View 1 (spheres, protein in one colour):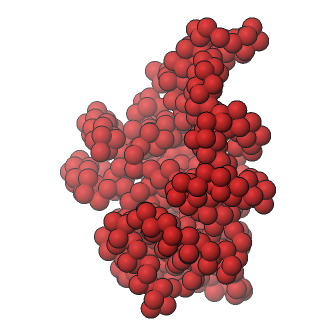
View 2 (view 1 turned 60 degrees about the vertical axis):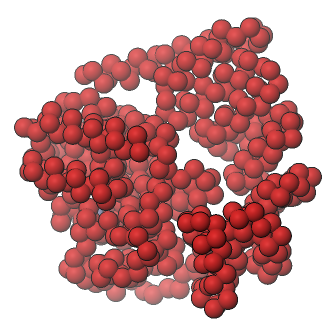
View 3 (view 1 turned 180 degrees about the vertical axis):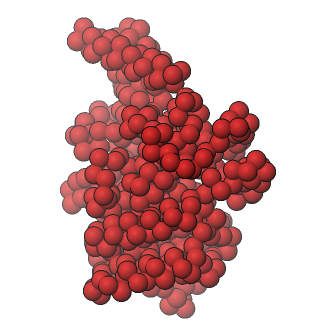
Length: 477
Ligand SMILES: [Zn+2]
């Protein structure tokens, strides 16, 4: 909540301060932010995102969306544009793009989609807003202001989109100042995002028809689960004309059957199983399995297993996982749940075996690496956490949690310098330079560490301080 309120305040501050020079969307080509400024803004946004309680931190959900996003981005018209994807815990149906290629997706959107292509069609549309620099153009007139201001404006958009109630207030205030139109994409933007998005979607091997079907059901207001509202419509007004346009384009492409990624259904079940009370989650999955109301039995049983685990009914959860192991196609997501069940039901040796066995099959699966690293910490084997993370860190050099785990492991070993150094690297990857510097200073002051380690810390500290000063000088310009 605190996150939303501070942002809301900065949003108003922004508008009161600059109400007289609000975007004029005429020819803004020369006013567009530089790539560097965009990236600095993206870092500001990602810092807030990393600290926000509304963000989904489940690594399997994150990786699912990241893989899907990356697959689409590979076909985007601007190969140099960077992208970051994250999931917002919010039941309304929405997705939004922010400056610097930061794209957020609500859990409500994943839950409302019938298949992966439908999610991909919205992502493709958002990616297109970024590559066509629509948002940048909208905010370009803020160029003379600091990057922080632009970031707060971009973040205010996030808040406005993430929370319908707050958003009503923000939008009313904004429209009272005559800026409502400027906050929404224009019709031309929407058309262009549809066209470019559809191209990305089909090039990446997804079904273009899913864009038609999903936009259609959003427009008609169908397919809303309880509490879900299609807030996507507010910022991207879908018209019959737009849908007809997409339909015409799709008609020109040959039909091909696209096999759906089973992970989509598992991730969707995982999100469904985490909603409501443990009992209501159990009821939902037991009911759908009993009445055979499902597209995919395996993902339904996977959801039921999670719901049972939430209720501490470990025997029942084990029964479902055994069903999955003998009936479903082998997958890392099932193996990970099997290991988590052993941990939850207090079977540390079985948990260890399961993690090691599964990691042998899926050596790069982040959910398993996190799980095993945490499990070693729980077993008081920090040296094993350290060697596991060091073995995998090159696969995910930007992973802040890897460094967090290292820091905890070094703390258990009583190694101060390494503990603070890792904590600093973790903050650095959460785009929090101030905290990163503080921790690196602690590392520099720590009593242990040899000459070699100390000089690495010293030079890294210099580098961080330089980066921080550099950011701030840009900010003042
Ligand atoms: Zn749009």
